[in-house]
Image (cartoon, rainbow, N blue to C red; front, side, top):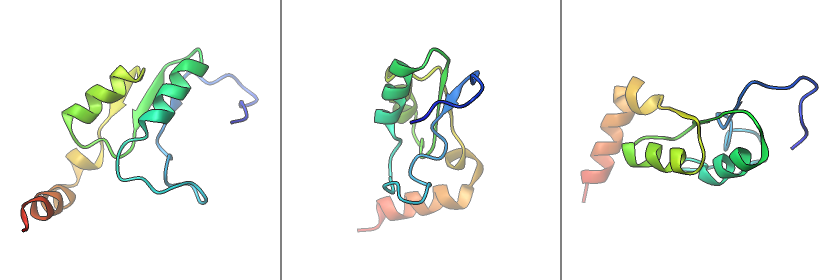
Length: 89
């Protein structure tokens, strides 16, 4: 990771798993949250694939200052698909 030319006021994990060449993930990148929290002097905002209260709590325990829950709340079709997939034998 190369530091930006201006000091950021926070770091976020939003693009983890979405940048070409990076591994695709199905769960939050809690390792990145922990690595950033240990390495930077500003708040780390955990975002990306956080779908349960347990995942949000683990992100906070990993050092996140705050957590963004997006699709799990704002996309009812994705939530419905997750329930259907989880309940289909």
